[in-house]
Length: 188
Image (cartoon, rainbow, N blue to C red; front, side, top):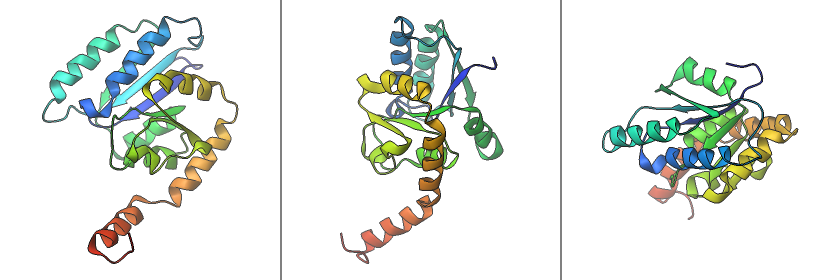
């Protein structure tokens, strides 16, 4: 990988609701514009195809990725443990392009790794994301947000804020609170 490459990462199962196709379509549009970055851009789409529509959707993603001429897309498959941590360490920016989520677990993991993030606007993103460490946008705002954050010299500040937030908002705590709420032990 070129030393000056900028690295985007998304991590989830390969499935239509996860929105990887939206990200690729927006990158295709960006490549046609004059403001595409001079540095090499790499996108890692980590995850395996989902059981139901995953294989067909994965083929669609490969087809979209083949249309990109300046952005190199890598599909490394499922990542867990040390391998997942290595991808977080490699990335400059985490992209959470899901169309909908009930909770942003991989987003929280990325924040804990100190990655600023760009998320599409849905409940799962809003439950985790704060403007101090990235952006929540509509699909039309995806590339402007990525572009802005890749050019922002405050990424280190965002990384520190993201890590601190994630360490203080563990998924296990959120799950326990939800269980208490559902059982009637917490006021709704």
